[in-house]
Structure formats: C-alpha cells, structure tokens
Length: 230
Length: 230
DNA sequence: ATTATTATTTAGTCTTACCTAAATCAACAA
DNA sequence: TTGTTGATTTAGGTAAGACTAAATAATAAT
Ligand SMILES: [Mn+2]
Ligand SMILES: [Mn+2]
Ligand SMILES: [Mn+2]
Ligand SMILES: [Mn+2]
Image (cartoon, chains in turn brown, orange, blue, cyan):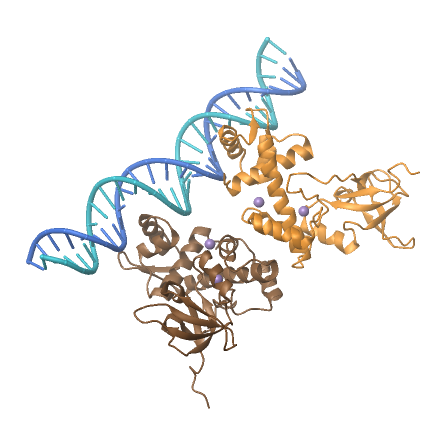
C-alpha cells in the first residue's frame, strides 16, 4: 500500500487538526492544505471509500482518522520531525529553515533512511521546535507545558516548545535566546493584554524583553514548581 | 520554472543515452524509463513545444538536449551523485543501496541541501561508483579509463569507475575489493572470451579472481603506463 | 418559524502522465 | 521498385488531483 504525497498530507493534516482543535472540518483542511474546499470534499469521499479505511467521514460532519490512518499519519510526522532534527543537527540548518525542506523529504525517504538518521541523532524525542517525535511504534513522548501567555509575574520556567509558524518569528525568538531548554522568568506583566516582560537565562540581572501576545502565544513553557515538591 | 519529476527523469535519461550511446531514440528512452514507447512520443512532443525549449526533437529522428535542457540534466545528475555520496559517506549506506534512494531524493532537495552536503563532503569529484559529479556550473571532471574487458595479461591499473547496474553485482565486486581506487593486475586471460584472472591489491602474491565478461564489462580502469613517461 | 449566512457538497473541467491498439513511417532486402 | 518489418506516432482512454460555479445543508439571526 503505497500512498501518494497528497494523501499523506491529508492524513497528517487531519491528525494535526484533530489534536490541536478537537476536530477536522472541510474548510479547516482546505485552509491548512491550501486547496479549495471542494477538493477536500472530493478527497475525503475517496479516502473514506478506499480500503483499507484510513478515515471516518460523514458528509457535513467532519472527518477523523481510523487506527490505520492514524498509524500512517504518525509515520509521516515521525519522518518530518526526524528530518527537521537531522537538518538542524547534522547539516546546520537554522530552525526556521527546516520545515519546508522536511515537508518534501518526508514523503520520499525509505525506512532505511529514517532508521539511519534516527541512529545518528541518538533517537531524539523532540524536534528543533520542541515537537515530540513519534516512536517507530507510534508512541508520542508526552510533554506537559503551558503557554507563555498564561504565565504570571515572577514565574520561572523552561521553554519546551515553540510553535512552528512564521520563519521570521522563529528567527526573532532565536535572537532573544527563546529556544527549547532556555530558562525564562516573567519579570513584568502589563495589564489589559499588554506586553509580557521576560528575562532569558538564569542570571537574575538579565535584560528583560517585552513580548506581545502574538509572540507569547507561540511559546510553551514548563513552569517551575508546577509539580508538587517534597 | 519548476519541473515535474517525470520531466527531470526524461532530461536525465536523454543526457545519459546521448553520452553513452551517441543518441537517444524513442524506444531506448522507453526501455530506460520503463514506460511505453507511446508515452515517450507524447512527452517528447510536449517537451519540444514547451518554452523555454529543453529538447530538440524531430519525429522519427530521435531527440537531444538544448543547452538549457543539458544544464538542467546536469543539475539533476549532480543532485543524484552528491546524494549517493552523502548516503555512502555520512550515513553508511553500501554502494549498492544508494541508487534507489538517490533516485527519489534528487527531485525534492533544495539548493540549500545540495550546497550543505557538498560542503560536508568536501566537494567530492566522484560518487561511490566513480561517476563524476558535475560542478555547480555544469562542468564534468574528465576521467580517462578503459574497460577491464579490454586489458591484456600483465597490465596493471587502478579502478576508476564501476557501472551502477545490478546491486547483487555491486555487492560481489565489493567483496572482491573491486571498488574505485583499488589496484588491479590482470594475471591471466583465457582465450575465446574466457574469464579474466585479476589480482586485487598491490601485493604480488595476492590470489587471483576469475571474472567473466558480464562482470569485466562493468569495471573501468586507468591502466598504468598509459601516459607516456619521462 | 422564517430568513440570511456560512459551510459543504456536487457537477463539470482541466492538466499531467501514463496506457493499449491501430496507423504510419523508414530502412533494408528481394 | 516494392514488400516486409521494426520503430515510432496517433487516437482514444484512464486515474489523480486539482479548480470554478452552482446547488444544498447547517447554523445563526430575526
Ligand atoms: Mn508534506
Ligand atoms: Mn517541527
Ligand atoms: Mn529520479
Ligand atoms: Mn552512482
């Protein structure tokens, strides 16, 4: 069963939408994949009538993945994130460059290639943006963290994940040192949705950066003292 | 101007056929690409009427590349051979595994990727089979060597290139140590197209391997003393 | 309970790249 | 010169996967 690039992208998109927004609708898929809604309808009809059944679809009611479909989606996501990590670590790509390249490569590499880069990287659990890399049997490392936008003054934490959105934003964050594993402290929080002031690094004297909501929404932090201590 | 995978494969095939057999005919292309001759006719008609013109084609008369077409063919070949080399050197693929993976990857990697792996490899001139890697401006390192089948008893030389054909044959040759840069001596030559006895390595006492014509036809050697000395 | 709006599907086309079967061309021998 | 034959092209068709425009269903507003 060899799937087209288009189908792999649909399965991946359905997976992501279901997990990030609870459900995958025709329009949301059309937006995500940058095709016309009518094209999505057509593809969903085809996918749900194909066997083995990869998606569960009822007209006007959105779509979800069957276990078989989810397995494939996770394989493609594993390819994507492993490739991103490899480009970053082994070939020196910056984290804002890796996505587009991975988007193409994910569909053409062999299992051999996947295994060898995973090996070279020491079987990483996360990609350069902090997104978890599914294992070969489709398990996802859990990561528990909260959005930087929700942190309050005085809280400290460690950056776990940055949403892989606009390359320019990623470059900006990298400049500030806001990358996975960095330590953050919220030193100030302006009222009425005003900017958040954030210190990067462990030193208490570090300069604070003022970050607006569009930025803090993209950053996820594991806040210190979240787990009960002692 | 972004070309489909199919078109890139046609251009590459036309290039290779013209250089290895003098001309590219419809049937030869159909064989090479494993499609029906009718499909080749259709594609050649399309390619030769597209602009910019990548091929020069007259019905019943074969096809050749225009300078623009040759430029693209060489870019794809550069991709292919660099990728083969990278898979071999950086990821530990054996030389019989690299071709199929490269055949897919060559169409999807970016210039960035090309540049970075070329850099990592130290801008190699040859791929794992000894095929020359075109430079970024489309120049091909020359390699002057002759087929092992044509060598006579007592001649010594250095393996330069092995035709990238059957993976099983490549594995066999690797076992014998017949890989680019190896030193060979023809110790015996049976008459009437009989096997060639070949010693691998520089030591005079090395065991000789008997190789049949189908094997020796695939191996190319730079024979010692070919150039006038003193 | 209607009406207006938005989301989604259906209908009808298009492009790319392949296929088979039938027609035609080119080259060579009789 | 005229067949014969192998190579090649044309004709007609399929399958993906996209699109636009028109129809319909679902949802929200009156
Ligand atoms: Mn993709
Ligand atoms: Mn990522
Ligand atoms: Mn190819
Ligand atoms: Mn090669």
